[in-house]
Amino acid sequence: MTIKIGDRLPAGKLAEFIETETEGCSLGPNTFEVADLVKGKKIALFALPGAFTPTCSAKHVPGYIAAAEQFKAKGIDEIWCLSVNDPFVMGAWGREQKATGVVRMLGDGSAIFTKALGMEFDLTERGMGVRSQRYSMLIDDGVVKQLNLEAPGKFEVSNAETLLGQV
Image 1 (cartoon, rainbow, N blue to C red):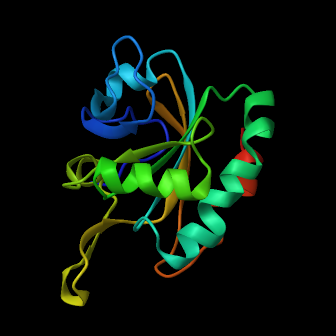
Image 2 (cartoon, rainbow, N blue to C red):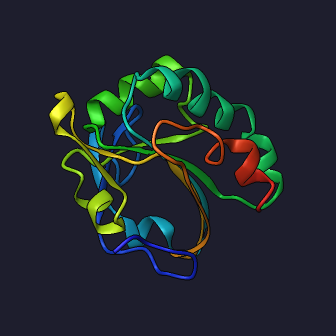
């Protein structure tokens, strides 16, 4: 079943490559419980099929980086980029996109969380395995407040401008 507005996010884990060691987060890949990450926060999340892919690299991530201050001004605590990639790939992509400290690049390497959301997209026949559909959502303390799901092959409603207008 696909998640919808008003639903609470399912339990799950996401991984992030941490560039600087801090108390509670070691250098390298760290795994976090989604419920802990969203507790008491407003999150702008956008998900995409894969790191380093053309539309994702040229439009999706740069749009959210450019709008980061506007999201903060509207009360958004964090911006997340979610993809079915491992944390090493997401970390490298985040560095390449200059997203470090602006957008959290979160990996769902085995698509477990993506499947729990009902947002998986099977590209096995094309040699790419299970991926995430392209979407954005506004999350408030773990509850979905807005959800913008793209039609296959489109990039029209999951962009930063659309979600920013819904905050």
